[in-house]
Length: 213
Image (cartoon, rainbow, N blue to C red; front, side, top):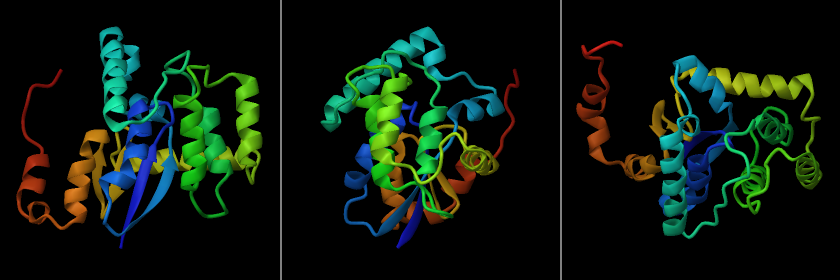
């Protein structure tokens, strides 16, 4: 049985779609998943990127594409009233539900992602909605506590230490699979496709000279 780490931020529609798609994509395979909320904004800052919703033509394309992908998957998806929004309260809430020394379970993560992406287009940060979500999940810890804030910081720092640059990223055997469209590649790896043990994995990712801007 393989142990997978699913690194995500609820602000990402691709993370939501990958979360929903994961059981079907990996059907018949033996695995466990640890869900690890992190701060996508911290990844962007660290690597010097802008988020797709921060570049207007890319934002328009992103939401057209994710609506199409949701349509193809048969998954409900409604873009929240404001996007990008600050997802930090949601990620802290996820960690606040986790047992001591563990990660948030799939139910808690599904509930938080649904709050954002199945919320009828409502504002994901609207205080009454956040309060209702917190009551629904009944977290073990206070999401605003220093302990929970540190759990989220630690998870984000751990992701950066592994070279994670985007969400969702799924980690298995120290290999990183980034994005919704990497799920078939991940499934092939878990099924033992010999390509991953050949030279191409290392060769394709090796540094090479190029233009520096």
